[in-house]
Length: 74
Image (cartoon, rainbow, N blue to C red; front, side):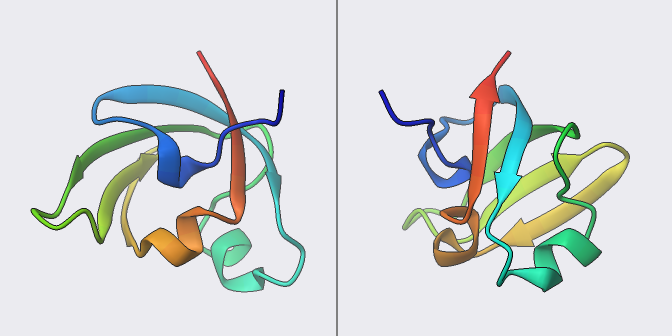
């Protein structure tokens, strides 16, 4: 079974980042690195963007970006 991406997690779900696509250097610079615990806080009414907490940082990510972050649910 493939690992879910950050884009597929429901609100209030905590997960650990397992992998970020290497071509997405911006996400790595924002703190989405393997081992970081993330939580999807909420989604915009049409589902895009997502508000995500990564450690002590709050991020707004488009679904397209969130699809490049593989996670394991905690």
